[in-house]
Length: 390
Image (tube, rainbow, N blue to C red; front, side, top):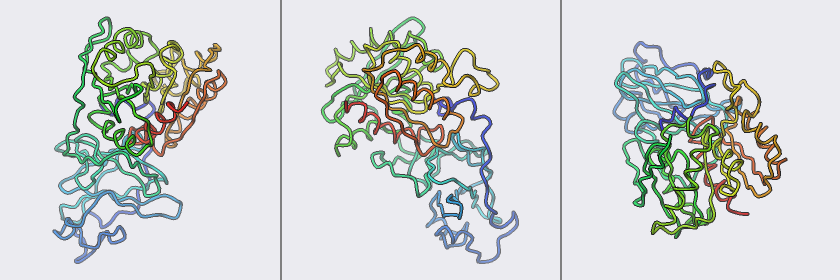
């Protein structure tokens, strides 16, 4: 799935971030001007010595608790494009050099995916070792807690794929796809990762779980990477996907020579995937009793105004289902949402509380991100571990 497909429709109205005063105007920089010494880059921008020391992004604190963050690009004009946090920020040129830059005022505790959009195409940041696929990178303000289990993969790296796989063709409205499996620490309960291709090709979930299990932060599990073909059709509170998972996919997993405890299942989903995970727990309680749900699209519903999707009934269809009084006493549900996605918070808070009232054991978290897998990936490991703890 393209990363943009995970974004809630309200992201189209993102605000522009505060941009600190620029360096020199488009004309030549003063002779010998260091320019970015405040960011720990003392050499004159655009020189060979500057590029030898350059790194990006770099943040320095400002008085309001936020950060003045410098992004560097070597080449030509373009913009820094952020995932579901702000409008793009144009790059400025340092004098007549090949140094293009943007200074962006970021709030405290923000982790965000970004890319450079140029005349030649979209690129990850070659000066940043934290890559997302080949075309994106991750920035984090210095006060953001680390994600120690996620290895560094730069823009030019290709993530390894698990060897075990199923060519799954459930039929009906669901098209064929390849489902990959990865036993971690000898294998264990199944962790079904919705939007599995994102966790294979953009964020290295297999390596992250390997590390987390090795240090004892997560119990041994068997990861099942389930890609989506049509996210709205499959995840929008409809039973077909989950009937096929129950009746076809899980029996096929059980027949494989892959270590797995098919009697225990955690469903992990984000955005529309998070909505679908909760829907599965409500409609298929014998199948799904453990959830890791990040930024669930709980605005989703039949009464939503297409012009203002997040402005509809609070909690959408998920809240309506929860108000029917299901018995969720057997459900462990971890919910997380980004502290920087304000429009999502009322919907998520309503569903969290309704699930608790229905008897579920609920854990609530707030990621240091917007509607962005850069934040979800930190919550994913923690919430899977918690879901398996009961």
